Structures are given as structure tokens and as C-alpha cells.
Amino acid sequence: MPTKENTTTTSNYDVEAREIDFVTRFADNWDSLREILGIMRPIKKANGTQLASYTASVELEDSVGEGVEIPYSQATVEEAFKEDITVEKYAKGVSIESINKYGADIAIQKTDEAFLNELQGKVLDSFYTFLQTGQLTDSYESFQMAVAMAIGKVIDKFKKMRKNVTEVVVFVNTLDAYQYLGASEVSLQTAFGMQYVKDYMGASTMILSSEIPSGKVIACPAENIDLYYTDPADSDYAKAGLVYRTDGVTNLIGFHVEGNYKTAVGESFALMGMKLWAEYLDGIAVITVNEGE
Image (cartoon, rainbow, N blue to C red; front, side, top):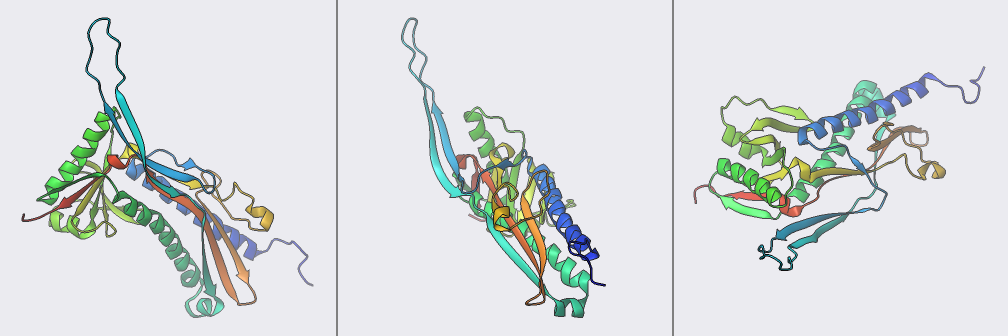
């Protein structure tokens, strides 16, 4: 006897479980990253929103004598950089031949894990590239001095803007860090696909990444970092028959799984619009290490 139409089957539960697991892990990883970077909750934006970074300065006028009109101090905020925040879409396919050869645990679960890591990495890689446009530039003769001065420069800049700095995040090249750390007993931690050290060399967090060029040290106050996102569930995609599973709390990513019987491939689709961003470009220090000069 054939199964009645719309009957919920085991395969439905398996697909729902995969979707829920994927978006939940992505959200949990984001929470870990938020704690590491010391930033607030993500900020939701509409599709197509343009994000802007600024430079800011204030020139105080000298005090004046009794009864004299007080001149305005010159406060300047200028737009320095703009970029769109747009929805990005990705897909992954697993053939029945792969499942038959390797088994579902490897063919599906392992590739889901790799898919999730690549999506996270795309957000981080874009941010690392953006950080290199920071406007507090200088050079020093050692890695240690570069880290110290990068931290000092961003703290000094934010104090001049009368803004508080509670934590400074430093970004360094992975091999540069290992060369400097050498045999030091330092506890490296891993989250959101990246390695980091807490409370080291004056930084609240030092992040190690191969995406940071060798010989560069970048510092940014946590107060200068935000995550903007578009909500895959807060749209008209469903009207076009495109329904994505979301976390239901902070919908950073949408995920959908279905089988394509025409090609005998299990397909997975991800939708996200995430952008790590800094409000002030002149609140990011980019220091070059010139060893031996």
C-alpha cells in the first residue's frame, strides 16, 4: 500500500535534523566569535544596505576672555570607505555514488562540516582584507614593538575622539606569531575556524591568521568592530518557493536540504549576508615589522 500524501517520513526528520544542526552550529560558533572579539550582538540590515566607515577628528579652539563670544571647535567626520552588504548564495551536492562508496557519515556529515567552515572562513577573510585598509600606519624594528605600538596607537586615537576602549584585538600572521612565540608556553585556543591567544602582549585577544600578510601587525578596539547581517527569513524569498531553515534567534544564515532525483544528488543550499566591519578606519592600526633595519 503506497504512503499517503504528506505523510511525515524518517527522511523528513533526517533532513530537518541536518538543517537545524547546521544553522544552530553556525549560530553557536558566531557566539564564540563575538566573545573572542569582545563585540556586541549583530546588527540587522536590509538587503542592499551600504556600510560606511569614517575618519574623525576634533580641533579645539583656544579659550577666550571674559565676555568674548566662544568660537566653535572644529569637529570633522568624513566618510572614508563604503561597501554593500548583499545576500550571497552557495550550494553543495553529494551524489549517491559518494554515499555508496564512503557511507553517509563521511559523504554527508563531513562535507556539511567542511561547508560550514568555508562559509565562516569567507566572512573572516573578507574582514581581514578590510582591516588592512586601516589608516594608522607606521613601522617598527621588532614584532614585539609593532604589537605594543599598534595597541598604543588605537588607544590614543580613541581617547582623542573621547571614546572608551575596553579591549584591543590584535591580528598577526600565523608564522610570524609562531616564530616570535618559539618555545614559549602559550595556550592557543581555536573557535570559528581561527586560532587565538587571550590576554597576551597587552592585547585582550591576539588572532593568528595566514590571511594577515607576513610582517604586518593590525590592531583594532573591540568597540570599533560590528557584525552586520541580512536576515534570510525576513524576506519575500518564500513567495518564490525558496524556504530556508534559520536559527530563529539571530538569523545569520539560511540552510536548506533537498534531493534532486533527476541527478541522484543530495543538494544543500546556504544563504547569508554577513559583514564584519569597523566604523572608524583611522581607529585601525596597520604596523609593518622591519626586522634588522
